[in-house]
Amino acid sequence: MKKVFALSLILALLVMVGMPLSADGHERWDGADDLAVNPLACGMGDEMMTDDSDDMAEEEEMEMMEYDGGQPAMMDMDMAGMDITLVDVPKLIGIGYFAATTLGQQQAAEELGNVSVTTDAPTEANIDDQIQVIDTYITQGVDGILFAANDPVAIAPVLRKALEAGIHVVGYDANSEPDAREWFVNQAEFNGIAKALVDSLADQMGADASFGIVTSTFTTPNQARWIAEMWAYASECYPDLTWLETLEAQEDAALSFQQAQTLINKYGEDMDGIFAMTSVATPNSADAVQQAGLCEDVAVVGLATPNGMKPYVNAGCVRDVILWNPVDLGYAAVYVTRAVVDGEFAPGDGSVMAGRLGELMVVNGSEVLLGPPFVFNADNINDFDF
Image 1: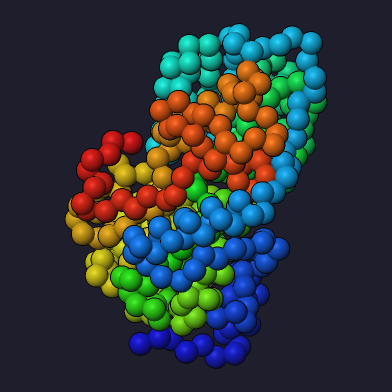
Image 2: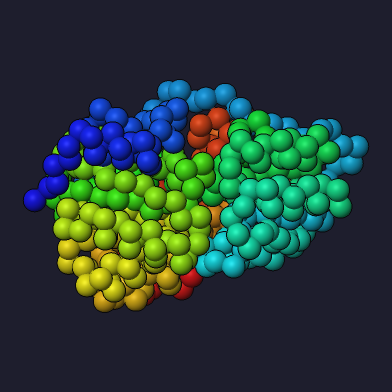
C-alpha cells in the first residue's frame, strides 16, 4: 500500500529537502535540474543491454563531439618515454573504493616501468582540503595530476592552475569542468548506471515501488548525474515509482547508517527500497535495513565494492550491487596519462590503448569510457577481492 500525501505535506517536504516525491515528471530534485539527461531504452535483461550498447555506439559515432578538454602550457622538454611523477588526489583516502583505484594505479606504474604514482588526499570528502592538496603539489612540481573531484566547479580553478603550470591533468571517477583537465576516465556512462539501478529495484519490488536515496552530497558530480539520469529513466519507464526523499551522508559511514535509519523510521512500510549512491552509503544502508529486520521488505540497491557487500549479499539481504572494477579505473587513468605524455593520445583521437584493458573508446568529446556497469550478486561476488 502506497502512502497518499496531502498537498500541504508535499509542499512542506519540497521546502525542507528540495526533492520531488515521485518520478512522474511533475517535479524534480533541484540539485539535478540543470543537468542534461539521455535515458536509455526501457527494458531489462542481457538482450536489452546488448541492444543498448549497439544503440549507444551508433549514437556516439553519428555525433562524435569535438574535444572539449583543456591543454597544459607548452613545456620545453619532450617527456616521451622518460620517467614521470604523478600525484593522485581522490575525494578522500581511507575507504576501500579509493584503495582499489590506488592499487590499479600502482599496477599500471609497475607495468610501465617509467611512471611513479603517489596517492595523497584528505581523510574526509572536503573540497577545500582537496584543493589545498592539489595546490601543494603544483607548487612542489609534478608531471601529472590525477583526481576524483568532490565538486566539479569548485575544483576547476586549481586544475586550470595546474594546466597553466604545464602539468598534465587527468580525472577519473568524478569529473571537473571539461576545460580544467585534459581527459576524464569515465567508469561507465551515467545513463547505463542509472538504468541498472532502477531496473534492479523495479524487478525486486515492483514497478510501483517507493524509494529513498542516500547520497554523498548534492553537488558531488557523479552522484548528481546518476540521480538525474535515474529520474529521467524512471519517468519514462516506471512512471509509478514514488521518489520519497534524498539525504546527504558526506561519504561518512556513521552518517550513512543514520540517514538510512531516518528513511526507515520516517516512511516505514511505505518505503520499498533505498538507492545508495556511494561505496560508503551502500553497505551502511544495508546494515541499517538488516538490523531493522527488513531485508525482505526494503531492497537496498547501490554502488559499492564487493568486499564491503559480501556479508549482506551472502546473507540474502542485498541482491544486486552495481559497480565497475575500480582497480581497472585507476589502472586506466595512469595508462591514459602516460599515453598523453608520450604523444600517443591527443585531442581528436577516438580511442587509446590501456595495457591489459586493451582499446578504450573516447566518448562525449574528452572522456575515455572504461566500459558498461557490472552487477555483483550471490553468483559471482565471492569471485572478487577488492
